[in-house]
Every structure is written in C-alpha cells, then in structure tokens.
Amino acid sequence: MSISPSNIGDKQASPMAGGDIAARVKAAREAVGYSIEDLAVTCGLANVEISAIESGRDFSPAKLKRIAGALQVPLSDFLPTEMQ
Image 1 (cartoon, one colour):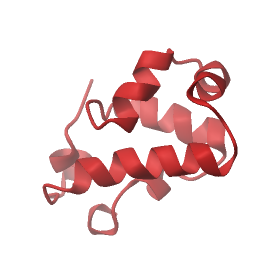
Image 2 (spheres, helix red, strand yellow):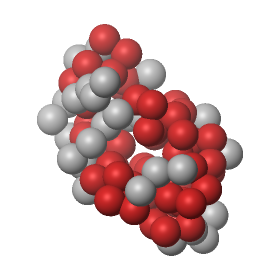
Image 3 (cartoon, rainbow, N blue to C red):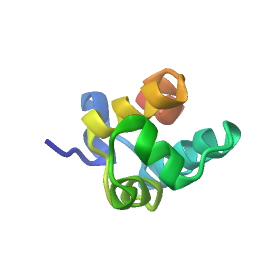
Image 4 (cartoon, rainbow, N blue to C red):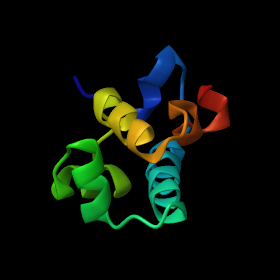
C-alpha cells in the first residue's frame, strides 16, 4: 500500500510535505554516511526504491519504516511537524 504525503496519519499535509519527507530521508541517510546502495543493502530495498523515496515519488509507509529502522531513527523523524 502506498500513501501520499497528504494522508500520512490521516492528517492534511501541505503541498511541500512530500518534499520534506524526501529531504529528511536523504539527510538522515547522509548523516550516517550511507550511499543509496549502502542503505538499500541495509534495509533490503532496491536502489531504485530508495531513489524514488528521496526524489518524492514514493511514500510507502512500509518502506519508510524499513529505512528508519536501518538508519536507527524513529519514523517520526521523516514526517513534517504538522503531520506528527
């Protein structure tokens, strides 16, 4: 199941929320020094899936949860404050 940034947690999101999620995922990945390939191996996703999330084309809750686990950050770190 995929969701759009406008319905994460059943709260209304701003148009920039998708970009916020993508930027937060990328920033978290870079903060631990992972390449897209490193993160893909660590969380069991394909490189293209990570790229899709970081470019704002995919916001699958299951994928975001796997990424958060691999980076050892809470899933809420990826969500804009108005969505928490």
